Length: 547
Image 1 (cartoon, rainbow, N blue to C red):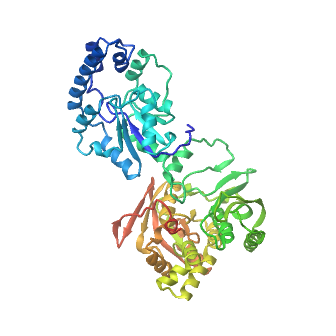
Image 2: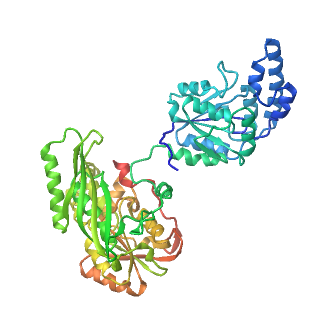
Image 3: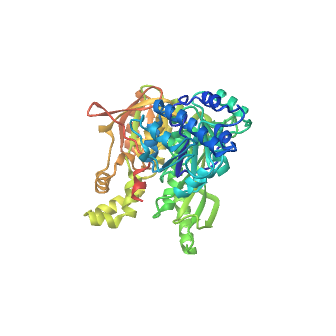
């Protein structure tokens, strides 16, 4: 399903049958008492009375029924938790109901953790404009909440709630309360047959998923759980695609001839403005290498902010070409543009490489008992970026100039091509994964998902350079969640792991065994000092908080 794009500032609710459990008000009894036909709604029926006295008496009977129902009504499932959740997200909430304000207030007395003050506004039939399905109440709510009507959800259990939302231009959500057939039969009696809401939920708690789709995301990678939902909308039936998109799958593998495989990778550099070209080439090349391939061709889209000079663009292109040449990669094309869409240079790279099909390393080859190795130490890339972008602040914190220079020079360690080549030649290597945005914490989770196995990690065995530890202490960030190109995760058969460790160390590259692969499934089992520990999770990379 292709949903239309939207963003949310406020959520409006119908009351009876939406925030309260349905059934408290017996509409059939009300209609029988008022002698209201089935094919007209109660409020419209009363308003059609020619004499004011008739209308007054009818409304008095209706209010009696409403008050009686309000006294015995109960909060709908998830209602209280949902309203408080919306408040934690900074969203405004309101009620737009055809009921009287008095009956709403009475019913809210039956809520344990919710009252009138928990809503930014309540619009009832006592207000001086037409009730739903007229859009007036929703339009007034938008004005009072200082939100565009397109930035509002209208949630209700009846056709009038949906029609009012649609007539106003809001996003509409129908609450079915577990069954849609009975309400639809009522709607058809009233003459409404073909009205469809934007979304339908069976219980209020499901609204959280819709709200998440309309909330602005923080800087950083698209969250894995949302990426998973997005990818599930696609089917990849092309037999030449050997490794399709997935969580933790940083490259695509395409069969281009039965024996040879083309490996493709795309990644942007958005944070690092100093030596961005260096990062752009190596971050893309690193992921190509984790499949066992040699990175060979690089294309890039360069976006520069308005005001950039030709010399600055020339310098970036020359740096890209030089770094690519250093690693045997050809810069073979791309696009360069000056645009007000960016405020600092952005380099979006696309790397390609090849290898024989029999040498393709697929994370699905992981097996229980494989050892999990990590090269160098965590957060190498993050350490370099922070030292280059926040050097003055580090000096204020008291870090010595030589220490800052050492951290800046970590840039020379962000390639994992050498150790990946060594691992690719080992018959015991079952999977490789480059540690990038989100740090080791996110990388191990992605490796687990892509490989279809649980992983145990010994936190004590995870190496951290002292310079990284000090920078993280000064800025109050966790190195486990700090961007970390330069560290390579390798899964290796247990009987080959010691040989592979020795070969990597012979190349003067440090490597540590930090865990092992467990049973099929997904998830991380963390150990600290031999005891069960909580595996850290980060909504965004730690470096995003600094920027």
